[in-house]
Structures are given as C-alpha cells and as structure tokens.
Length: 620
Image 1: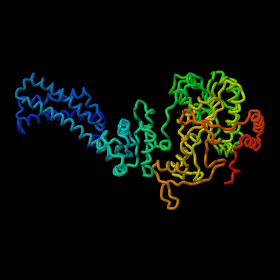
Image 2: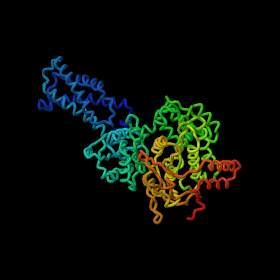
Image 3: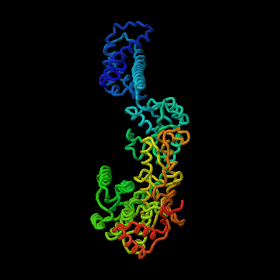
Image 4: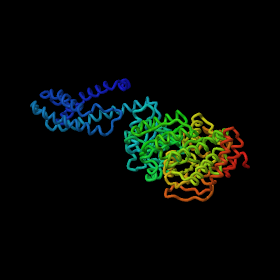
C-alpha cells in the first residue's frame, strides 16, 4: 500500500498530508480535553462544533507558511520550527473563535495542552512519513552507495544534490572536526575518518567523495594517500574557485586524478609580473588550441588584455577554444586566425592588423616518436616556425616574445628535444645580435598532467579497458606539473626576462612512471596484478623505450642557475651560438628540409646542438 502511495504524483501526496492534518488536529484537541478532565470520554457536546472549526482555522495557516511545500523525504529539523510557528498562530485564532463562539464549557487550560499535542502530532506525522519513505527507498534503491569526506557546507550541498539524483546514495559522512562526529547532517551520520573503512564496509560502500574544495592540495593529498590500495574508488569536487556561488552540482563531481596526488599548493601569482605583458595589451598566442596554448589563453583573458588573438593551424582546436572564451568573456575582443607559423606574410598581416604587443609561442610538434619518424616536418615547424614568428614579431614591433620550451631540450636524445633546443639558440642569437624592439624570453618546463602528450590520458584509457597499462621502462622518470600552474608560471616568467633569457620552472620532485601507473590503478579502486600469482585486476607491462626516449629528463644543461624573486622560477645561464655561425648553418638546414634530405638535416641538427646525442647512438 505504502509503495503505491510513494509512486503517486506530488499533488496527491500533498492532498494526503492535508487530509492527515484534518484528522490529526481535531484528535489533538480531543486528546487535550481528555487529559485536562482526566477522562477517556469527556463531555464535548456543548462545543462539538469546535472540533470541526480547528482544521478550517489551522490548515490555511499551514498552507500560507509553506508547510505543504516541503519534500517529505528531505525534511530536516527546520520543519519543527515551521510547525511550532503555524500551530501557535492557529491557537491564537482558536482562542478568538472560542471567545466569539461563547464555548464556555471548554477548559481554557486545554488550549495550552492542545498546542503541545498538536505540535507533537504534526511533527511526528512528518518524520514518520519521512522514515517510511526512506526505508522504502533503501529497499528499492539501486543507486551506488557513496561516503562523503567533509561534512561542511560543500559536503551538505553535495549530499542534498546526490539524494535527489539517480546515480549515488550518500550513506555516511567523515569529518576531521570532532564536534561534528556523532551528529546527523541531512539525515546522514558523521563518523571519525579513522573508522572510514569499517563504516564503508558495513554500508557495502566502495566509493568515497572528498567534498573539501577549500582544502589545500597538501591536505587533499594526505587524505587520498590514506585510502591508496584500500579498494576504494575516490572522487572529488573541484576547487572552491571553480564552484559557482559555492553551489555544488552533480556534474562537478569527478574521479580523483593524479593531479590531486602530485599537485602542489600553488604560489599566489605575482600580479605585477602578469600585468606587465598582458594588462590592456594586444596578446597573440600561437598554438592556441593545444593543451598549453589553450590554458595560456584562459589565464590571459582573466588578466585584462585589450584583445587576444588565437593563432592556430587546427580548425577544430581553434573553434573549441574560441567558443569557450566567447562564452565566458563575451565583453572581450577575441580574434581567431587559422594559420601556419611558417607563413611569415600571414603572421605579419595578423600582427600589424591587431597591433600585437605580446606573443606567446606555444605552437610546436611535441610527440617524441612522431617527430622522430617525421624529422623534416618536426624541424620545420619547431625551428623555422619559431624563427618565422620571431622575425614577424620584430618587423611588426612586438614588445614581448615568450617561447614555450621543454625539458627535453636539455641534452636531447631525440629530434623533438633537439629542435626545441635549437629554437632556444635561435632566439638567444637574435636577442643578442639585433637591435630590435622585441624582448625574447624562453620558459622551459617538464611534462604537464593531462596534456595531449601526457601518459595520463593513455593510462586512464587502458585502465578503463581493463588493462594492461603499458610502461616503457621500470626506471623511466619524469617531472610533472599541472597545466594551470605551468601556464601561470609561464606568464610570470615571460615578464622577467631582459632579452635572451632561459627560465626554468621548479617542477618539484621527479616521479617514476611505473609509480604513477600504480597510483592511477589504485585511485580507480582496483589492484595492480601480481605478475607471479596473477592476483589483482590490472597488470603493468613494460614495452621498451620509444624511439628517442630518455630514462630521465633534466631541466638544466649545466649547473649554473640563478634565483629570481619568484620562488618557482629560475634563470638558466647557458651557452649560445654566435648569430653569424648559427644563421649560415640554418640556411643550409632550410635548404636540406626543402629538398627532403633527412640525414643532412639531422647532421646539421647534431652540429648546431652539440649536446644532442640520438638515442640510437647511446650505449645502454
């Protein structure tokens, strides 16, 4: 019977609750009179009409104060205050009715007793209905049970959002605040985090949602590490700055990623550095649709440019970043330009048309094996593309030029790294030899989590497919940084150069790729398969180093590095090539590329980048 009632449309449920009140209110008055006279059969014949008047007086008040608008299954303690308020008003009106109706036989003190009993009856009816509704839901609920770490505002909003959704059913809260433990939040009990695994096991729950968006990355990392390897799937909310007006939506929930585990607490940006190259300026970003380029665009538009020019060769990538920026920054001048960085005339026209003052050159081919297999396109795009953009910047009077470089440019073992190192040498030579209005700066950093060249998306896909997760070598090690942090530091470093500077970002501690793979498997709530016993869910396989790949990446060619006034930006002091020597060799390389002479191009690359040692020539 109750199951049928639970499936009724809301308007019928409201009607049932109203009928219940029409019955309970006269019953409360009769109970009050019976208690007052001490009899189960009080004589009420002289004021029997009053029992019919009570619901007609009280129900309209309940309707007016919104008592029937509450959703029964989500009732909280506030309903008690609403009922008390409504019953108090009805008692005052009832006293007026008694006086005007001359119901002298009614004991006056029974009205006070009626107030107490009516509140008890109405409140009890709501909580009994809520309990029955939730019990029925638990019996029929096919949603996945989830526990929530954090019983603050974000946790409460999350629980309410989940309760009304079809996917998850919150079963427990965990919180570091001892004062909250043992209490109920949104009808869900708050437990000690130390008892988390036991509580989750009792509730048959394998998913934990970390609802602490204002916590530091260090604190979130500590919480995540507690549950590593515990057969728990971790999910999280984005940072507080990403939540709109503090309101939590179901779509904001995501799986905990390695960025939550490897990411560091960010250093607040130095606004004076960012403003010097961006504020009220015309800014152009090449490779604007790429992972680094698009994040640069997102952060540039937040810092008050006069206009931003998105220069990109890939039509779809350009469309995506343009649509995103126009949606969020409709007031800003955004210009999208489809173009190739090797087309100097197009670059010059674009820079002159929009009077570009700052250029961030992020366009590059960066996939090591692909560039290794396509040497000439890689050299042309990375080296001559940089040269072309630099020359166009000088001729059009650009004030600041920032090259996005890579740690693979340090003692490179592949064409991609060597071409990026040669790009640095080109800009260093230009900065030293020519009297021009453009200040050239290079910023070098390692891998960014989630970029198109990162192993993280590959590992996620492999884990989703059931494995195996492929790692090139058990000892391969890389530096990692989140894309937003990398982009923010690039914007600041670009403003610190005097001309020809190479800046290196503090990437933190290097991470073994195999350890990264293990963490990602465990964060998915799975176990790494033991190669001897076969126990576990996902296996890790070693497939050998890819063409041109190094075991370890470095950020400095030598040991000579200078500190800057930013704690995570250093200035590298490295050698360079005189312009007269460099550009004559570059012309030979250009000619070799034009006629498709791969070996000659590679030899010239080795000659110009003296640290370049192809992986095939290294003794392992």
